[in-house]
Length: 412
Image (cartoon, rainbow, N blue to C red; front, side):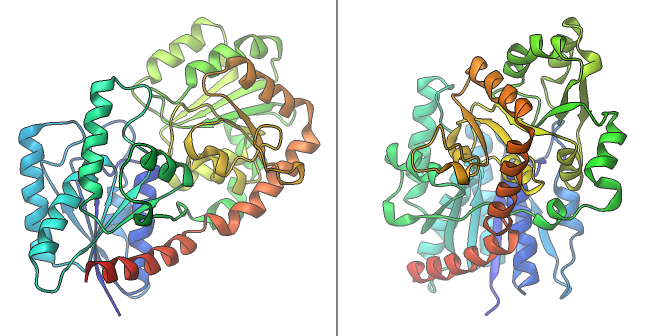
């Protein structure tokens, strides 16, 4: 049975949450569902996912119907939030979806409240209300008062949805530890991605072709990051931990893929240290070129301070690139470190984990990868095999399909 599905996302910038949402929309349109996507105003240096979603046409001719919600903004604003709630409620009443699926914190709170209000007043108990946790809005780096607001908002919203989807088991654990929702509401659905683009490169995007394009030699050791140049992504830690190593090893190179508010300051630090010739900063890269950039790397370094499940990690593994990563949130569910994690065997290892913000352990992990080329090759190949099915977009869409039927049953 074809469904009418409304996804709601705060901003359609280029990012993991947005990619997950757009892939869900595309897969559901391919299945014959009528898919709508509501979003707030888009701005910032991160790039936009709007064109991809807006231009998509499924093989059956279905498109994604786009709806801008002018007052659904990321920052807290009492006036705009109230207006955004009523804009969403009006949209839901007009579309009459079978399922409303919200993503990210602001869209999650306003969207669930609006959808729940419509559901409870409708004779047929529509829509079923679903929310995906891509990453918790509350975390250790925020003031206590702000965390209290976020947690209270999430508790409020959890009472106004039928199912809460976590992209990683860590998200469920964090929400339940904060007394948000009920155990029976949560289900884990891994964040899907276009695995074929990472597994099967076109001739101009092979490892050899990309290293030549980016100016790396065959004997360079390329340490890559794929992340916004922004707060909590750990680029300062990379400079602090590896600055002396880079100066001592001219063949060591950093590849920074991404752009952000901190770009000028970070690249200024690189210049002051005399490392500009060893750091390649690509700026913003289209999503379909991320895998190409990753294939130029010998190791992916992901020093983030907070995550949901960082898509960068399984994407690198899909390219057979091993990972050195901070133990942030759901990262350990893809980066398996047998020395760091209980219950992981050496034969399962896909990378190295280090405590968040630990510069010495970051450096040790990268040095180990440099000194063990054969072992890191095996780790990458093992990670590729693990992630191929686990993170396929088709797997995610199929799991969501089953979960929607469950949510609709709960709504009745």
